Length: 287
Image 1: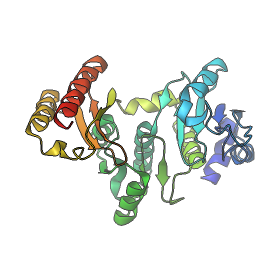
Image 2: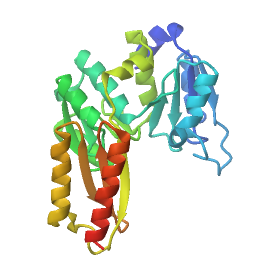
Image 3: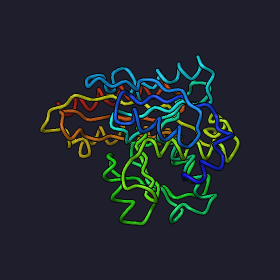
């Protein structure tokens, strides 16, 4: 990675970096300087209490505006502890973990470096990621929500790429955990080697609108949604209606009296309506 960046550092694009007043505030700047990467940096003045405060990957709109206002080529946003990285393209559009996984898996496959031609994501990854994998002849394995489950699957089966929509990307050839700086550097390598803007690279995947609604239920009933015939029928009817162009995912919260209803589809307003109807049904039946 270091050699690749040094070779192309003179052609480097202008990056915006948001370190979320956190763990990467100093080391990110040092690495970018050492590699000759041109950059502008914001939210790099931690005071002990301002970590993640209206900045970083949890407030991606900050770096998006900064990139557009300063006419930068891309923006990079880390989270407070530095294990996650999200990006924005030159137009200020968010590049989330699913898009990053698509870009990385395609690059690694073309470089013959994608272990077992497979990458790992969670069940919360966008439907577009699954469609991207099929269209590009790549295997996608999905796990329960949580980077620990992604890593377990990677180690168990010998895969070298995995991650979450949140930007927690694991590149096992380099590191056994998420590393936001590493993620951003590989993204820059791919942009430069392909001589492509990030907005063009991201076109390889279609991200479907996604709605998440929490249904408030009786704590003793939250795992019963799989047994209720009316709920099961409503889910099946909706999946049949989507015919592969939508998805319904229901899961109980591990800590709260909630059942999470996630629906993906092609029309935002329609899936919002259907998610609300399904959440209302779950609340009624599991009260």
